[in-house]
Image (tube, rainbow, N blue to C red; front, side):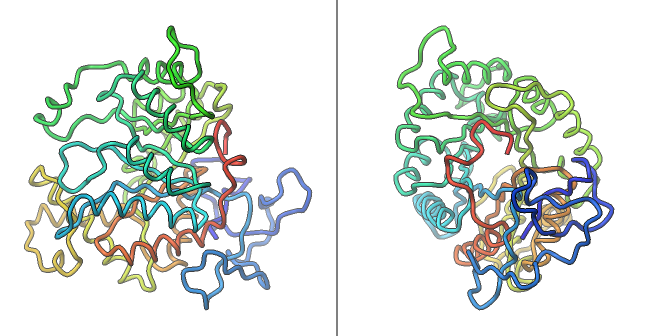
Length: 406
């Protein structure tokens, strides 16, 4: 499975050798961590096969090693050519149910407006539907875009949600604006103080605001910041965990600027009641298949949609792999497509395990947020199962991250 960060390597810097799994020491307070200098012999411990969550029952999955980074899934309710938008929303709910069965720790949904390729526009509504179909998995927004909302309304919505999923909610908050000027006008966007709005949401949820928001939450509703650049500093000042992705991860590019930004977040972090220590989750597209070629094919629908969005201003529904291969494209579109593919992790289970281990080791991440999507829903289900098999079972909600460093 994907191992945790080596204790002899500080967060944000690569290990001198490939991180592999050692044997935990029973009863030791750091049970599950590898000891510096301990011999390593690959991810699978000899004689300890584990077929839990295996997408291929006739194959042994890697042995479970604890502690390890946690796995969560982000589903943006991607639309597909030939399907109604309602099918995308139903698909998100069904995927969350399967994720719970696979032992995934957390399931995130997104907020986008005026985007033909994404049906996920109302995170609180979609999470309510998922809460009614699940029992253990944590549910989160990734995220609610605060420039579009009043802090009191956001707090009220998630306090209401907590009645249907007590102790299972995570409120991820971001600051992205609408994709186009007409969308921004429709959202009545104004210049807002993101840090002040974040603090206000937290005060409403914890009962420390000037007025009391009702209903009161049925359990803790921890906040997370979807961060880039300045957002990392805001999160550090407020003592909140972050989810980072894109260029900050340096996948397919230069990792140093992102590592410096994460180091700045950790150094500037001010402990809070919710979060005593800095916590970083990383988000990127991850797809797993039997062969490298099959996995790379699964990346094409999303990569092509991104290339078209970059060059036409319209983010379209997903198309089948064959249609993407046959599509004519400009050199600029090909460049964007190649860039999107390079920023993802795709391959066989062994290949994905190795690349994720390196990335988690480099960033010191406590959690992977896999934001994968592809046209073929069955292939996506198989990929989710294979990815879950690399991480092992999640903790129960009582042991999960809420208010902890992970």
